[in-house]
Image (cartoon, rainbow, N blue to C red; front, side):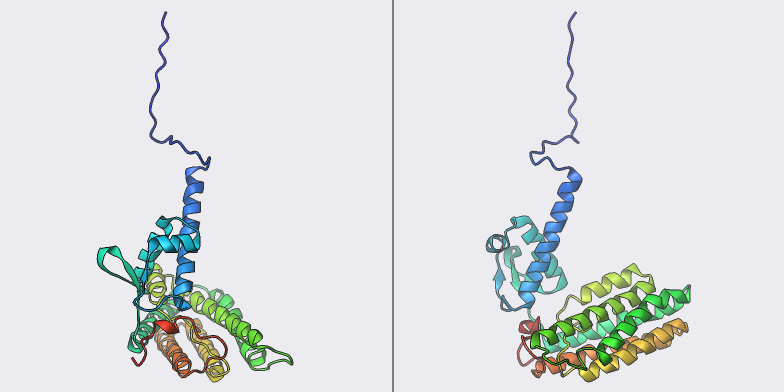
Length: 276
């Protein structure tokens, strides 16, 4: 009697010399792409590349210690965000913005955040949903009015001041994001994420010290009024307040362009066309 051994090809079984599962490989690839994207964006905003300068895949891959695939994907994403411009032969060059470009983007952010505040008021199901936002508002209030920005301690260094500004920016960004979360709109979140990739459009992105002290105090009052309007289900009022609040970014940038920042130059300043 003959025994026949039949081998059935299964396309799902792929030779994998690394020993990693498909899921692990995907997670590693996603993580590498996210790291590459963040690194390239930061390098551009720090001014390591000049407007119009071409970014080449091979040198960037060698510099960041990754393969060309995540570099290529990151360049494509940054082109979608508007920080890079696509050229002939799928090449990429650092983009450039006029001051009017920034103003228009700030207006767009204001319209979106205004819509988010209105929807948050209209879709509020329980007043307790605002608890986290009030806590963030209280933290910002204490940080600005009684913290190291307004009441510098003896021996405070320039680095301490920069760290304090960074902490304020983090809390402020978290509060703005929480208002958008209350809107319960994926499309609004997606749209805001896109417009806020443009330099100086995100809340607090152009905060300067000590020039922005008065603006910070005004921002605290705005936050209180916006949250109060949302809690009272006053959608139209919340929208108008949020739109006006977004214009503080313009005032901050005007101070930055006049040289109001202490310490190192603001991120992204090199991408703004001189004299525009």
